Length: 137
Image (cartoon, rainbow, N blue to C red; front, side):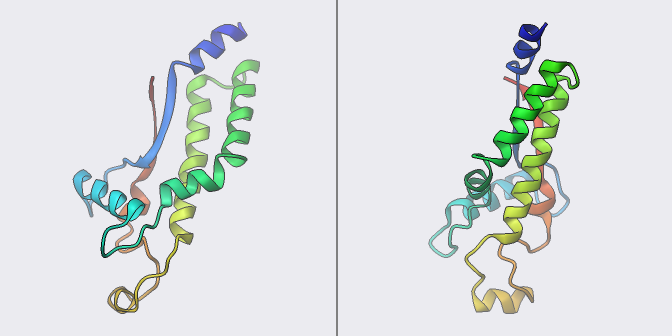
């Protein structure tokens, strides 16, 4: 029974990123926003909210949640889909938190234009686009 449950776990994976549609941005615009902020440009400093979240959370937080989800699947308390959904929800939460705390700060001219110093938050579209997707491997 446990072997079958483990096999089911290996048939899926969870992906987290700017994947949810939002009215402020097309999918292509979201891809650019993510790329420009993750890696920076000659005018925009890198503000890695995805890689930063992986760095901050993968060693302990995500590993713990994953371990508990696998235990739930092995004991029959969770399906593999529910386990991946729980892991994905934690990851979404952590990526959004990283957006809230990312640095470096905005330039004074950007702060004046936006009215605040929240580097990755302008319309809120990027933040709301962060979602999970459980898909087959």
